[in-house]
Image 1 (cartoon, helix red, strand yellow):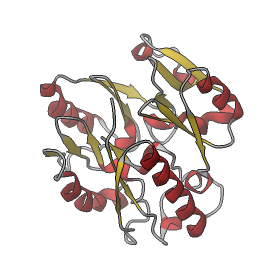
Image 2: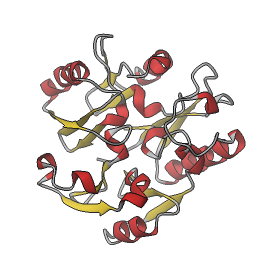
Image 3: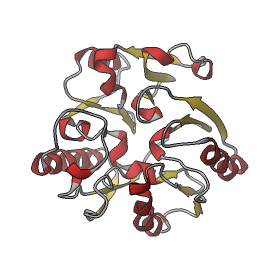
Length: 253
């Protein structure tokens, strides 16, 4: 899939009040903003037009826009995020996406975060996590299956989201943590297995045949470099403090 557009949101000065399980200290807003702007610049260099939304002080996690929607060529599904503090974020995302795609809105009965949704070709893998439940997956499947997509649910026992531990990096290859290397849903893929100490690097982003990966993970860098694509390393240390990573920071389509 070739991406032409992205939507991102400036981090708010309140971002340290967001949800996190990490024990890495509070993010520095100046550093967070610098890292965000470097991320946006990378997307621009890869040929994407980036719509940057203003910061949303009332929603300290709102710069992790990926959780609010899932976008494909035929439509965009507006999610119902699993964390109650984040559910209001969709109100400002939906009007922006309506300029690009027909919208389907999930109900409030189920929950789903976009960070739990991995698309490879016409196959969706959706993580069942603390943020995404069975009802949410059923509603999502009902929205996308008429367009020829298949949906496979993956039970995620470790990591905030599916894409915290599994990502597609091109060349029929998944980058994943050790606990998922033998998962039957992934049997048709080549795999790069990340050691536990570099698990954060599993959140590597494949865009237009270039890989964007977190800075500071030498084993993962060496392995993905063997795929023969350009690799861009970005400092995401401030986002890591809030359980965020590269895929979280944009909606790409």
